[in-house]
Length: 160
Picture (tube, rainbow, N blue to C red):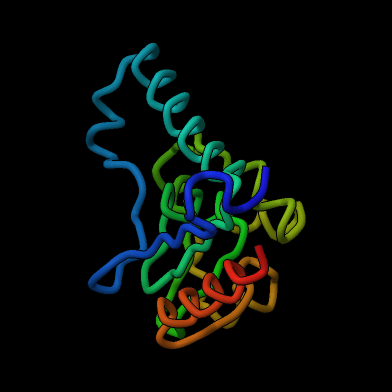
């Protein structure tokens, strides 16, 4: 299939608002789940993010601020990731006694390597956009990030 096989859509851009790209799951809701509910919750998230990762269209994360937990998994499911200078990345699961269930444990090491992934997941430290670009988590720092993502998507669409 080509990038334009799903109608006329060549690219999908995901972004946030008010300085937040995405913060992931509601921890209070997670704590209320029983074993089967937790499994179903993880399965659904995996299906959504895998669908995004396998989309025929170019998928772009335009990270405009906090990219935390499942929000980081969302960005990782995209084929291209751009971030504003204000963007920060963090997976706080270690501080909460949980680990991502939406594919981040598989996707992040493919991008930045096993050692850096282990450090980020176990320390739950925050990574700014500069470091994220240096380690390969994002493709480029651009402000305004959504404008940059749109321009890239338009260039991409003209190629097909």
